Amino acid sequence: MARRVIGLTGGIATGKSTVGRLLAGRGIPVIDADLLAREAVAPGGTALAAIVHRYGSAMLTDAGALNRSALARIVFADPDERHWLESRIHPFVRAALQAAIERTAGTLCLMIPLLFEAGMTDLVTEIWVVSCEAEPQHARLKKRDGLSDEAIAARIASQWPLAEKVRLADVVIDNNGEPAHLERQVACALAQASI
Image (cartoon, rainbow, N blue to C red; front, side):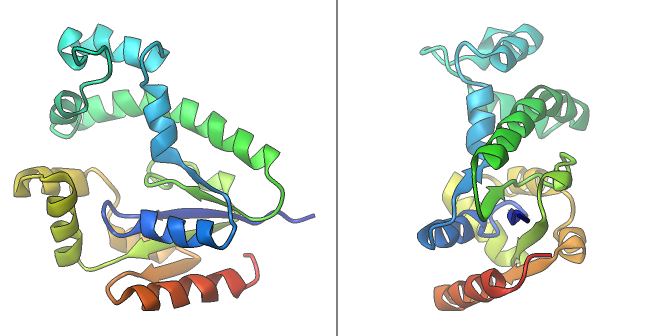
């Protein structure tokens, strides 16, 4: 039987999580690669040990967890360091996503912000890209994460251009309008035959 595996992606703060919640509300299992990446760097994990070995104990909070803001200052300032970090995390995430595919019957959504960048398109049968204009994307990042304009620019620049993701998408979800418009697009995309 053909399996429908939706690869849900987009740019940072374009609305992937909102679309993921809409899919989950329709009974579709959604596996979040960001949550899996957090597991990869959890205390006791090999990725966290490698990070501390490379950058020192400043990468740990007093509780022994990853100091995300300290690590972000390094990896968003230096593409080589970001690639090093991703090489420690992406294999863990890929294996967990593959396991989710194998244990799930029916339609499944893999929410993978770096679907293209991490070379994980082979895991999915169709690609959905959530897109929005630069201004709301910037505003969402500022509100959600309290980032400076410089930090926002660095995070956006660390990903493929949104226009390139849109060009490669099977489905484009436009997140510039009202929530009802977003819901209608998700319902329409789900009703389409799998690619």
